[in-house]
Image (cartoon, rainbow, N blue to C red; front, side, top):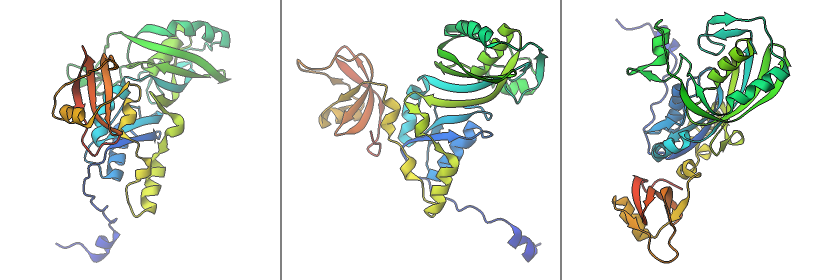
Amino acid sequence: MNAPAEAIEARPPEKKRRPKRDIDGWVLLDKPVGMTSTQAVGAVKWLFSAKKAGHAGTLDPLASGCLPIALGEATKTVPFVMDSRKVYRFTVRFGVETDTDDAEGKPVATSEVRPTREAILDALGAFRGEIQQTPPAYSALKINGERAYDLAREGIVVELAPRTVIVHRLELVAMPDDDHAVFEAECGKGTYVRSIARDLGRVLGSRGHISALRRTCVGTFEETLLVPLDALRATSEANGDAAPMEALRPVGIGLETLPALRVSPADAARLARGQSIILRGRDAPIIEGFVAVMASGRLVALGEGEGGEVHPRRIFHSGAVG
């Protein structure tokens, strides 16, 4: 049976299917609260009609801020961005510990104790440097192939082993009232600030969880460089649904923390064929470890130096820019 004419007209118009394209570069997204990292990647991928996309470090739905999204060839540099230091600004609410260690969880412990500024400052030293930290039960870590948060949501008791993480900096920024304190942390890979909030609350005898969280920096990707998703959408709509290309950053910014090696077009061609190159001459650089290989102003490969040679580890196609 055919649908009535009025029913057909009431249906919202379907979004026009966009042909997928080879888009290479980074979008430094200011992720909004309430959106998962996967949803954010999907939204950006659609706006750019990109064939391939990924992100450099998950942000919880509760969190906002720096979510670097790699498109195309930039996905090859994601591991180096994920290994970078990250900076978080977060608010701890004292008095309640939750099962998720943030405001979305259910209370599991309470306390009438509220810490003084002096007590907090005295306690922070134990959370700096190389520390042992137990990840939150609601995390993306895998247990026997299953995500911990999936198991926890099914009511299965999740026990994650403590692991070593590095907190380079942890500072008390403000205490707006007796129930809340604002902190800033600079952390290494794998550190959970939700765990810091939980463990700090326990040490202070006040219990606690994160009520607000923002990632302000990932490696060299600072807060001033971030672009809100609404701004990307507005730019696209204003230009007839065209991709907001002005927000696309070069592939090479994901490797800015690595030394750069400039080679001849001939050596670049060898690397592109998967062949190693030898660094010859009196002034040849001594390279050990990973290096970003450039030729004619373009990023051509990610190489690894060893014993006077550079071995290709990732090759970047001609469309990639440095």
